[in-house]
Length: 190
Image (cartoon, rainbow, N blue to C red; front, top):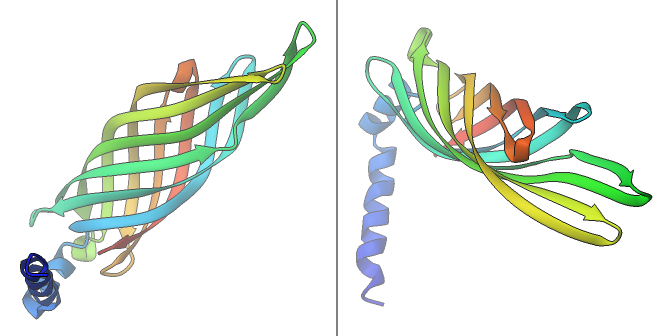
């Protein structure tokens, strides 16, 4: 029991400091500073042989950002998502199915907050994506993962001190495919 007391005291002190008027005023002047989490969804356009396919993308992000007094914003994000991409065909009469599955990744962001109260953020970033590809043929299936570089850009609007809306685009090349995503997200800062 004694080992929990310092941890509880630190948590209580942090909670008090975060609710102090001075800290709240500083956060209001920098709406993109802090931890955030939220869902995102959109369209994933996948260029695969023989053609392109527009599929649903859904997932979520968790991250931390720091906004300077001059308006520059620096951050790190972790992302998890999935697409509805699936193709069926046959090879010598054997039914084939290809599915692009879960996508995990991380990105570093840099942006600039502008406008009244610096509530409008334009950002760019880069990082990595790890996607799973599953191939099924004649009752047998095999999966592989691929890690590739990714770039992203977007706009985010801090609707309130804790809530923001994001519209972004991302380019990924998983498992030899070319994928572009256009997503919208709702993020809660805590």
